[in-house]
Structure formats: structure tokens, C-alpha cells
Length: 210
Image 1 (tube, rainbow, N blue to C red):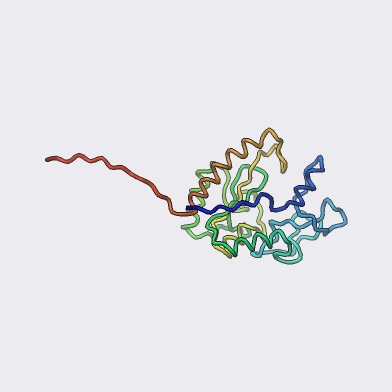
Image 2: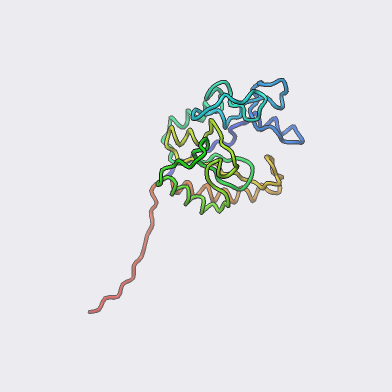
């Protein structure tokens, strides 16, 4: 009853680059945008076409590229979203125990009541202490963000679980991985369930007088 798509790495070049570093600090792709190769690149989660901003230079960790969807990685995600009728999406990030959802560019909560109720239910099941928009969770707004584009352009109930302990940073120790996987398999299974019709059987016992 469900078709599920997995994208293991949105930023494969950044992942490979981090493998060779003791301090795993690279969070952008590897497009040369700065004299420092470590600081160069495009933040792929600032490169989507809703409230995109050119306000961060090529060395800034929030550099959003020359224009929306300038990067092959975000173009690929855009294509699979446009070629399919996805109902829900989970964009896993590291790190911290929280759930963010649209609209991350806004200073106030602009979601319609019915969608807000869906996100509240998901957050309750996930068990995160923090959930909401970027301003409500991390304390600042974000531009050109994937959840905002998926929700606005495709009306996908999209969210970004921030997983892994604060102590592990962007590259949690191997000892933490099994727990992260287990917790988020259950969360993913719930979102998959919510993406379509939910069937249930209910029994009613009644006593009637003759």
C-alpha cells in the first residue's frame, strides 16, 4: 500500500571529504566557492527555490549558491519530487534531538490549522522535546530550505528530524549509530503509515436484553 523512496546521501561529496578529516566540519558540497577548500561549497539546504537568499558569500557556511537549484544534488531532489506524488518526506539532519518543519523562513507560525495538527501528532509520537519551525527550535530563520520548498511547491508534509546526540556533533561516534538507527526506523515507519489510508479493525461487545 506504500511506495517508499530512500536517498542515502544528499551530499555524497561532502561525506567523502569528511571521511578524510579528523575534525568533521564540512557540511556543504564541494563546489569551489572560496579560496579555502574547507570553507568552500554550497549549503544544499539553502539552495531550494522558496525564499532563497543570495545574502551569504561563498565562504559562509550558509552560502546558498548562485541561484535556486544551482546544484546537481538539489536538482536531483527537485526532479524526483516533481516526477512523483509524495505525501510525506523526512530530511534527516545531524545533530540534536528536535524536529523542524515549515515555514523555516518565517518569524511566525504560518501553517494552516489542519497541517499544524498533523505535525503536532508526528512530534508527539517522535518524542522530541523541541519541534516547530527553525525560529522555534534553533532560534533563527533559514532561507532556501528543502522542507519549505517541498511543502510550498508540492504540498508534501515534509520535516527534518535532527538526530544524534549533541555530544556527537555532525559525525556521531560509531557506538551511537545503532541507537540512532533503531529510534529513527520506528519514526520513519510511523510517517510512512501516515502517508496513506490507515486501516483498523474495532470490535464492539454489546449485551442485549431479550
